[in-house]
Every structure is written in C-alpha cells, then in structure tokens.
Image 1 (cartoon, rainbow, N blue to C red):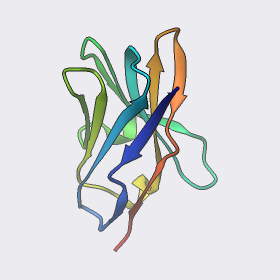
Image 2: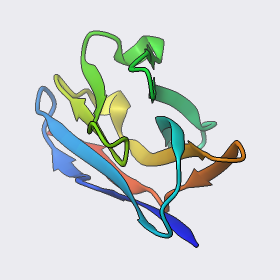
Image 3: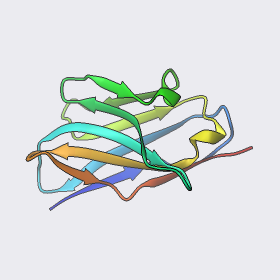
Image 4: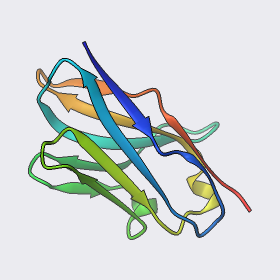
Length: 116
C-alpha cells in the first residue's frame, strides 16, 4: 500500500517563504505526475502547481511567478517553493500523485497560514 505525505507547512508573515515537500511511503510505485492543490475555508480545492515525469510544469494563475514546483531525479519527492506569500495563500495544501494505473493518491494535507 502506498501513502502520500506532505511536510513543511506552518505560519509565516506576508512576504515570507515556505517550502513544502511531498513523498511516498510503502510499496514502490511509478509516479507519472506530482501536483499540489490547496483549499481555503469556504472555497473549492484548486490547482497550485503540477510537474510531470518529463519536467513539464503547470501553475495556477494566482501563484505564477511566486511559487515553483520541482522534483527529485528519482521522481519520488516533489517540492513546492513558495515565495512572497500573501494572506490569500492561506489554505490547506494537498499533494496529489498520479501513479501507475492512473490512480490518484492524495496526502492528508498541511496547513499554510500567512498572517501579520
């Protein structure tokens, strides 16, 4: 059984930075795409960033130029570097991995809070 786990959330002031990590544990699995989503209170879950095995990236409009997604060469861990954070970035951030069989695996989420 494969589990996905995020880390690196926390509280930061506006203009600050955080780096989130996401990795898998359990049985080895082939990962096709790694993505980060977020959900703020009262809002729908939205795409933040995603990266394919070939390194192609995609970003939500609200984070372009401020966030960067990357992955390790083994395609086992993804990272989300978040800079110039704004209060609107406050949300629970979820990692999603599309794995062999085109199954979606989600992590439990990590809270990011941006406030003075």
